[in-house]
Each structure stands twice: as C-alpha cells, then as structure tokens.
Image (cartoon, one colour):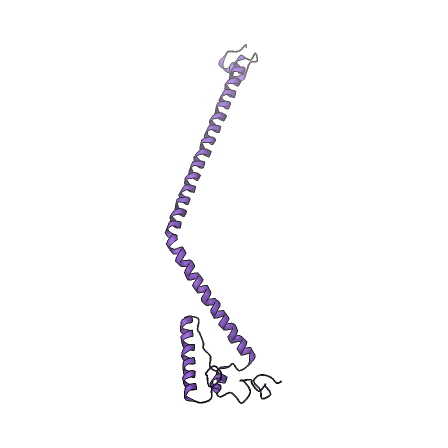
Length: 180
C-alpha cells in the first residue's frame, strides 16, 4: 500500500498520481454569504457534472465522470480534513444563527414589557430610598431634640444646685447677694 495522491496509492484510489484531470474545485463561503447560497452553488456544480457525465461515456458510481470526481477531491488528506472541518463549522454557524434568530423572535416582543417592569422596579426602589432617608432624618431630629432636652434639664439642675448652694460663687458676689 502506498500513500494517497502518489503513484504507489491503492489501485482504487481516485487521487492516485496521474489520475487527476484538473485542479481541484472548492466551494468557498465567505463570512457574509448565506449558507443557502453555498448550497445552491454546490448543487449547480453537481448538476453540471451530471450533465457532463451524461454526454461522456465514463462515469463513476454516483453518475459523475470519474475525471471530474477526481478533480473535486482534495489534493491530500490534510486538505480533506480541513474541508470537512470547515463544513462542520459552517453547519454549526447555521444552527447558531437559526437559534439566535428564534431567540430574538421570542425576546423582542417581550422587550417593552420588560423595560416597563424594570422602570417600575427602579421607581419603587427610589421611593423606598426616599422613605428610608426621611425616616433616618426623623430619627436624627428626635435624637437631637432628646439630647437638647437632656442638656437643658442638666443645665437647669446645675443652675438650681448653684443657686441653692451655700458657697458663694463669683456670680453671687458680683450681684451682691452673698455675704461680704
């Protein structure tokens, strides 16, 4: 057994050296192209090959002319694997686009309702924040008033204690109330 694409390749290998009639043809799909366009291009190429097969006598089992079939085959196994992987990636891309389209078709009609719900939620949160701010301010004011009342009561008690004291303070001497 030899290597694919060489003269020592197996006898049934379509890529045997010297069996290739022309350069290999590939279908290139650019990033912006649609998958349907790529499929249509491939179908056109297949129909062209089948029509040539009907006019010429030599055909392969699929109805293609054997020289044309060999021309479509990749030059080596690496290129074949690359083409196979690219085809799988194209299929994944198509499925992802289809899923994304379906998801967007479901989400877009619900978007205004979701936006209204979020706006209402934001308004509710801001109202709660305003209420909590007023509540904190009220507690602060009550605490300040309680502290001022306690300070006033302590000052009144201090003045009463000073007035009732037997000691003569500086204020009493100046007013002339104390013993001289």
